[in-house]
Length: 293
Image 1 (cartoon, helix red, strand yellow):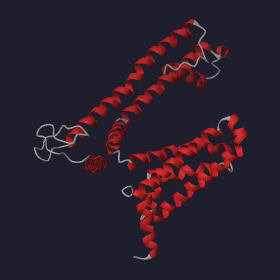
Image 2: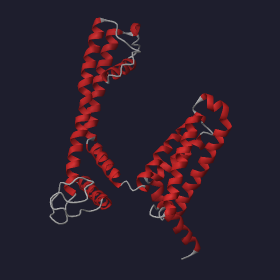
Image 3: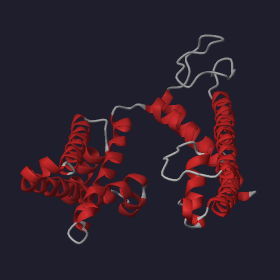
Image 4: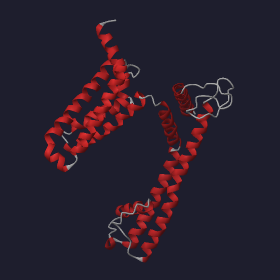
């Protein structure tokens, strides 16, 4: 093996791998650096601390950005498929983690967008091999994706309702009571129908209060709709997931995702890591069937 290829291979094992001591140490060091950089960012947002330690915090931010830039370049260098890494979820997050500091040279307020670095801490799931948590998050994500059309229809209906109520309250109350435009009135309708109630816009007339009361009561019933949609899809996903965990001895399904032994015959089940691979293949096959249909 050529020296350059050997170096790339060694760097790849350390940077992308977690099965070696050096790989785990590297990832844990990166996560500590991410948390420290976020602490610097938070401290910089405090007026008293920023006034006294502005230069030190700025230098610390440049240091962490330099470290993350070097790490990103090393990942591109040792990756067998640099383009695939750059366009992957973690690749995009790694790039977005370093861009705010460079953008801050032109737009100073952009530096606080560095909080996106917190997404990089998600690597801890891979480092600590918390596969079952990733498995559960995949179930939740698929439930959200399956219910996206119903949720879109729901939000479209809500948008129509708040527009109607906003226009209605604008006609009833008018600019004299703070409802200066239909967009302003739609904002009031959204705040009211979500039961937030900032109190910056309040109807004064009896008819306006009646409309507000109807909007509030409607809001309580509306809030339950997306919860029911997602819960139904989540229940279906959990049932489908349990049907995938089959016993190799008696072939019976219905086991929990973290079960190690069959609840019927006591035989050992597949490891959670193997189930994740099987689950990903199953979801990929379903996605392919859906796209063809």
